[in-house]
Image (cartoon, rainbow, N blue to C red; front, side, top):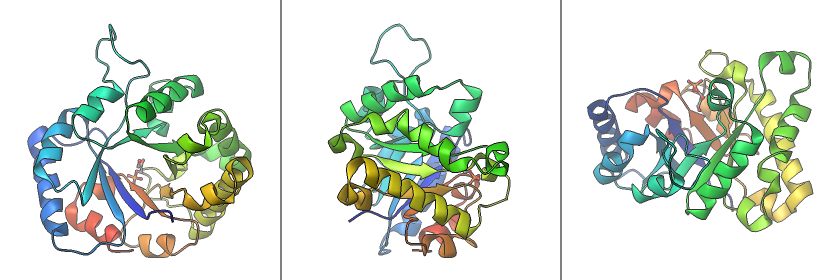
Length: 251
Ligand code: 13P
């Protein structure tokens, strides 16, 4: 059975001290609570080891927001998948539209990142999603299909079974405009149908597929009630414990 997941993506926010305070507060808020979903927080690299040490990682998983497309060596400023793993983090967000758009991450680069993440025992949370012009032209399904076919659909069935997919329409990220419940459910059902066609029904049913883009405490209950929406990838609302906890409690 696939897992419900609520994952926070802090993006480039919070000093180390602020991030530790946020993680500690979340840890306290969830202590003793019985949760119906897996909780993950995606912190900047420099926070990872300290956050892992400060929280109950059986309850809250920790994700990096990126990793290098190279194993090791002379790549100044990069952080490898094995370094991420050595902090105790278990997940890595890959293919976020901000990485694709602002840092030129192509499908070829992302294939290497996904392979290295898996080789180092990290769970990739692999993002896909279309820009507004593509949605307006009603070409979103073909676009997302291509994003998947060029990347994670190259994986073996065994490896694909280890990843999480997050659909984040770019027009809904940080805009306050959420995809309607129908739009989100429709796309996630489409993605699941593609997985079924490629890897079979069992793997499709086992794959957690998340929605991201202006997800908040108000819209989460309806989104998470949809049959193909297995949780959320949360940006802004993951930066305040009360908001994030309310989304977690939507399950
Ligand atoms: P917001 O929730 O701030 O729209 O961000 C979504 C996102 O990009 C998560 O990765």
